[in-house]
Structure formats: C-alpha cells, structure tokens
Amino acid sequence: MWHVAPGKMIQRALPRPDPELESVYLKRGLILIHIPKNAGTSVEDAIFGYHVRHRTWAEIRHLCPRAWATLPKIAIVRDPVDRFLSAYDYLRGGGRNAADRAFARRMVTGRSAAQVAARLAGRSGFRRIAMQFFHFRPQSDYVCDGATAMVDHLIPITHMAEGLQRYAGVPRDALRHANRTGGDRTDRASLDAATLAQIEAVYAKDRALYHGAMAAWATKDITRPMARQAGAPL
Image (cartoon, rainbow, N blue to C red; front, top):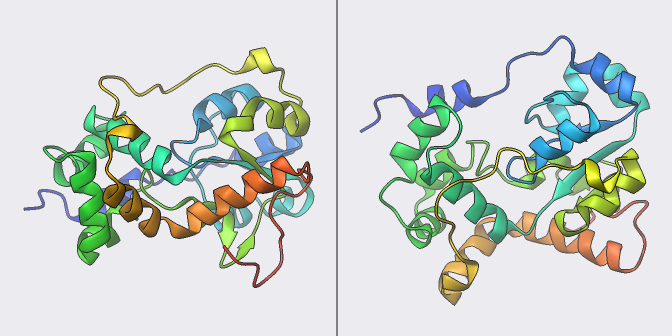
C-alpha cells in the first residue's frame, strides 16, 4: 500500500536544521511557535520576514537555547474542528509540496472529511500515523509539556490581529493571508454531530487549550492566557 514508508514520509516533512534561526529570534526579540494551519505563514512573514517553520517548543529550546532562555514566546491557537477542516481541505487540494501530496494520497484522497475523522477516531494505526504528520499533529504537541504550556502568550486566532499588535508590535494592516487553501472548502455546518464529536475527542487536549485561551482572553487576563504550572488541566 505504501509507496513511501510512513516513517520516511513523515521524516521528509520535518523542517531542516536552520543555523540562522536563533539569530532571527534574537534580532526580533521574540519567539513564535508556528503551529501548522493556524495562519502561521502570515504571522511569521509579518513578524520576521523569515520562515521559522513548524517546530515544537522542545525543538526550538534545543536549537536556540539562548533565545529560549531570554525571549518571550507566543503562539496562535485555533478551534480544533476548524483546524482539522483547514488541514483536510489543504491536503485534499494537493498541499504545498511533494511530502504533502504523498501524505494526502495515502490518507486523504478519496475520503470525505467525515470519513477521515471516523478513521482518526476508530483506527489506532491510521491515527498514529496521521497525527505525526505536521498538518494533523495536535497543537498541544507544539506548545505544551504534558499539562504545562511552554509559551508566554497563547493568542486565539479570532483575536490574532489584536494579539500580534499587543505582543509583537505588528500593525493590523501588516497581516497578509499567505499559504491560502485553494479549491473547495468543507463547511463546518455540513458535519453531523457524530463527526464533530469524533474530531473533538481526538483533539481533546487542543479543544481545552483553545477554550482556555479564549476564556482567558474574554476575562482580559491576556498577559498569560494559560497557566504555566504542572498539573494544570488541559
């Protein structure tokens, strides 16, 4: 079935080492954790004019120890159902490169969003492989160590312009929609209750992460949208 072994396919999609990354962060005075399908390409263009790529907090800490120890850290978080649909539509449309297309052929092509969600929920092998690939990888993998958020500011995507202006000094008119998903889009309203429940169950940690950030934003406690303490529930 697999023309490319799943492990190799996933490995090919990982960002390459970047010897310039730490200097980019230090020069800007800020670290962005770029979570896939959360408008990160537009954000990294606006903040850095440089592609920092999709790296987890642990990878950034390893690659950029001085920047990690001294700089504030931000990330954009998104409702997990919306993010799943964005990733599904993006891959169904061919993605951006050969790694995306190879993954899509094996995991997405010919399947509806509901069918992919059902496989994620009901087939452990499919879920294990799919959720290692960066488009479907949980947001919590990128920003949390267990139950501890490893960033200073979690910005809900619905408040992205305000958050970036506040924490990164990015003017609202500086954001441009980059890496736009083309083709048909799956309407969330077209999904039945069972499918929505499957996606939310698979991404339960992301759902709590997003709703926690939204709740903190609503109460204006936006200096630290998620408590960075061990044992804090996700």
